[in-house]
Length: 173
Image (cartoon, rainbow, N blue to C red; front, side):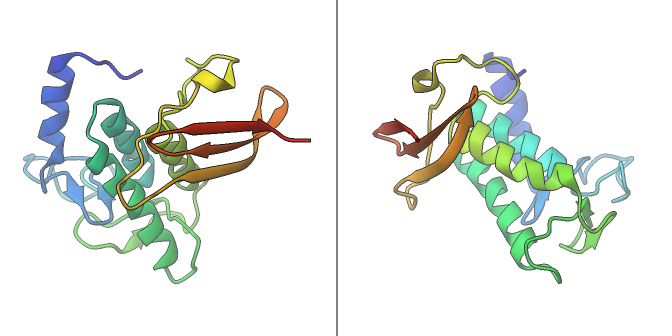
């Protein structure tokens, strides 16, 4: 789904400006676009798109930018009126929740960003049954490791400990 071509990296780097990136996620349209008005499909911040952006950032080697977007999910979830909830969308100009108050794809993209981005796991069917070759982590400096407990992989459960230097996988049960 994501290409490794130099042209893709060049185009992706154009998405990193403040016209697209906000402290609460990625806009659906550049604030510099003449059609931009901050509307539902013309500039609003969608956690769904923010998650796609985060995964793509990791896949293209923009690890800090991918992690920055993962942090927006945490901010949005735990600074809301209903802690833990991630809304369908947020205003394009301020972190005000809009749309549905709780959205499955918004919450799931947080997990997808962690697994597909930070943990380096394939998330769109390009995986192998060999769990040992699945993870390619890129953890931020301040994060020593991630532990995934009861991680279900092809019907078996594992405990997976990821760091930038080492991956430990143990079958449970």
